[in-house]
Amino acid sequence: MRKNITKLLAGFACLCAFGIAAPSFADAPAKTEAATTTAVAAPAVTPLADAAAPAAAAPAPAAAAPAAPVANKGDTSFMMISTLLVILMTIPGLALFYGGLVRSKNMLSVLMQVFMVFALVIVLWCIYGYSIAFTEKTAFFGGFDRLFLNGIWDPAKGTFAAAATFSKGVVIPEFVFVAFQGTFAAITCALIVGAFAERAKFAAVLAFVVLWFTFAYLPAAHMVWFWTGPDLITNAATSASEALKAGWIWQKGALDFAGGTVVHINAAVAGLVGAIMIGKRVGYGRESMAPHSLTMTMIGASLLWVGWFGFNAGSSLEAGDVAALAFVNTLLATAAATLSWVFGEWISKGKPSMLGGASGAVAGLVAITPAAGFVGPMGGLVIGLLAGIVCLWGVNGLKRLIGADDSLDVFGVHGVGGILGALLTGVFAAPQLGGQGIFDYVTNKMSADPYSIGHQVWVQAQAVGTTILWSAIVSVVAYKLVDIVIGLRVPEEEEREGLDITSHGEQAYHG
Image (cartoon, rainbow, N blue to C red):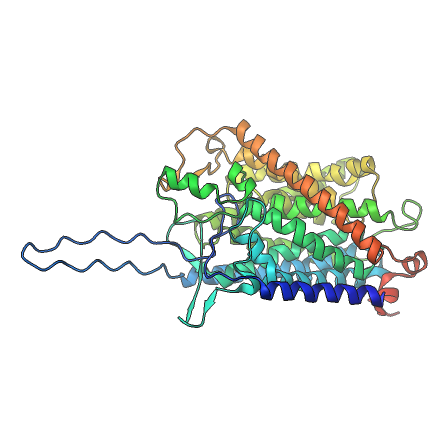
């Protein structure tokens, strides 16, 4: 094991050395119309035409270019609060939600995995992840313009770079955008651990996360969310040319406001692959594996619901109307999904449960994520109601069909809910159903072209399919590599004793 850890540390050192040697550039664009991205360089500003000179005067000097846009303190504060809320979702929200669902002997192991994955991904994000996800290179993978967050602060000029929002001429500090998107990457990777909880080696989890984050999350984020921002779009020609620089899925016109594909489907597929490759828990199907603390799970679900307002409303990147729409959709859809799950469970099983209420809330949050800023409140209501029922089937009927031991139902909730939400976004984003339609940055208003629900759903399906395929391939390869080098699973005797003691030498509870 020491040799394996030494190899991992040596590999990480090589990565850092490579990054230091890589060329750095001053500015790079980013952001996506249908998601949560932004341009990493300050928007270009077209100089004003020269003023008319007096007839008898000497030639007038050229008019000075207008100053670059300055970040509004209200938008900046809103985004910093939103970032803190996403952190709250992960630690402690997701950690407690997952921790309560496992047996008491594995409580600390789950908390430790979520906590450490969050910390690990934030570090990797600032070293190279942000640059690969949100700078221009190819349609599938960004470049190294922002390696080690280079170029955001200019010590020679004493200035900070700004990031574009979804409104022309409106920016936020780029460091705020870096932090906000970093929390998205971290919670996505942390979601995966619930699928193989109670049986995976701690070192294997960390090693897998490094590989999956690099080769699955970053390309997905780039493909779905990267574009060069609205300020460079002035006519049909520039609209077409800038679109060619965007991520592959963004170019297709897929709508993903806050991460239905990038976050939930992506993580759920990785979790399901892990559950299959690692295998079922010892005693699965024969021994009781009931959650040890639904109290903890309820607290975690509540923190997730609160934090998700930052996740969805913050994805508007501005404290404006779209943020308000995403906010109310997050509130309404989640409440609707909670009701539909609990009543569905009540009808099918005879009793409503706290676990069902918490699971329904998370299902609603997942399903509304890609749609939050695109659909009207009644569209959000329908998405929530459907999410509760469909995800209830996902963790019962579908789980039995698949036959995998997805410990905490990552695929049943995040996979099924993410797919449902992504597809229904194409339906309820239609203006005729109260949605926002498609924004045209050439005219700087909603597109006058008729909105085709069938076409948009097909585009959404392509985004879903691409994400599933990409994540599955990367996951299989990453798990296999980690299994060869470290081994994925703890020995049976350690699993029976519990990972808290055998992996971490601690106990969550003392008699």
